[in-house]
Image: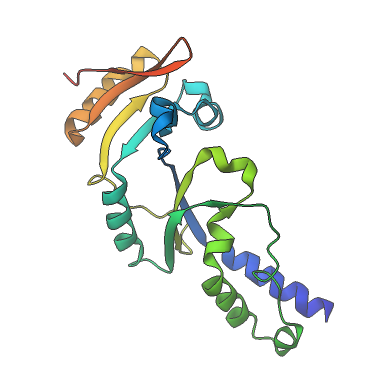
Length: 202
């Protein structure tokens, strides 16, 4: 019985690893936050994902366009889901519990597949509350490929450079922005306030 349960759990985790995630952050809808509620103004994200603002950029997307165009592409690849991440502290019991009677019959692929189909939101669109400040939005697709590409050109509207972006990078960013017809700006902190300084593409 232990071997059957372990085998089913292993198959579930292996199948879960086939899913690819595209993670973004959303603006906070609270109007009183002003610029502090914008996705690009989260210092914690610059610190964690962009080498403290030295080596990354914030790509700005139109949420409505992205939420319409990206899933259409992913559906052609495999099982997919998307939506804002829900933040709550709870154990994944129903989502990972395996009926030993079914596991003993050995139909592990079907068991794992049904678990994922039934609980995609809990398995992929739920995180502990400690991550709530990221206000994450995820696109998910199942594929055995190492990487999956999607065309985001229709939803991309701007490129915001980090506070410590080296000037040597500006030329490449300008060239890309001209070709993509998107805006460029650089994030600056002034008296603890996030300010965007526009940059000419030419």
